Length: 156
Image 1 (cartoon, helix red, strand yellow):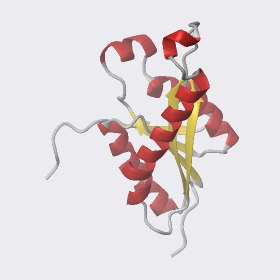
Image 2 (cartoon, rainbow, N blue to C red):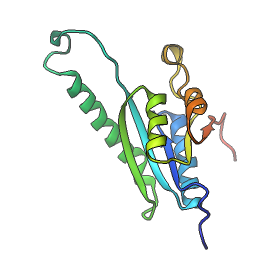
Image 3 (cartoon, one colour):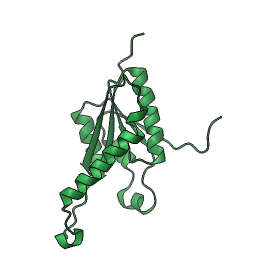
Image 4 (cartoon, helix red, strand yellow):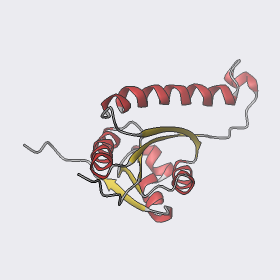
């Protein structure tokens, strides 16, 4: 059976929330159905904080970002990559920056055909401060965006 190549490159964005895991299941299914390369994307939020070295101890900003990136890469391996079929082509992208802007830039750079992400990630104060990453990506992405909504309860 020949695969339809409507979506050659699919990006799945994760913040490791339950909703992001649902988005991953959707992206994994679509990648399998369309014979697509799956790009698993996590963006660590980089904040510029004008503080002296005494605040962070011996860690520099670069060291903090490096440790956060390493932890995210390990989580992606544990939570996502292990669930991929053996023949699934994929790439992992752990990036640092403002999430929506960084996701849109990656979509342009990698010629992404479809971005799949949870419609709800951050909650509470973080959502008030940063707004919805999904909303911003939908408005600015160069491709289609599938925002996966959380499911209330399980379907039987």
